[in-house]
Length: 151
Image 1 (cartoon, rainbow, N blue to C red):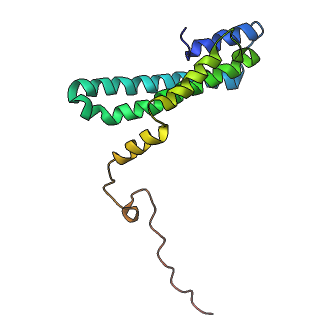
Image 2 (tube, helix red, strand yellow; image 1 turned 90 degrees about the horizontal axis):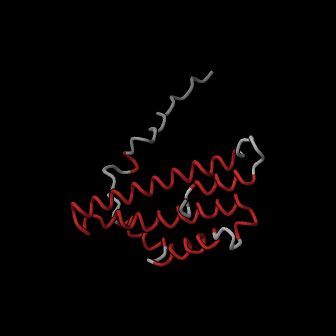
Image 3 (cartoon, one colour; image 1 turned 180 degrees about the vertical axis):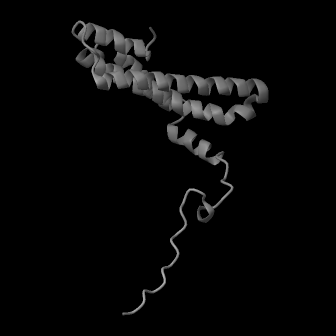
């Protein structure tokens, strides 16, 4: 398995968990979340590649910025969870997960900090077609109630 692959979580747990016992629920969730994050990032990359083929660099520019934020975050999060699953062993040279975590952290800065890419993504976000006052998701205020009859 590759670093960052949820299979590493399973290997660690098979090694540490008693025979026949289910995986701890938090770890089951971490493995499921890792799979979701990997697939989301993979789809972002595929869409950017598709746009590069069809529209060139200008057309894929926003997707590339999305990837520059999502991929390192995903890698760092999964490496952090894997270290947690391995416990103290996760910080040793026996499994090298701490190297994956350090690489992911560097990867978040190597092509510019996330904030730079997030700003570019925000700047290309299309303006909504309605204002807050016209927002279809906000309930209109209640009409004023007529004054109650004086007794």
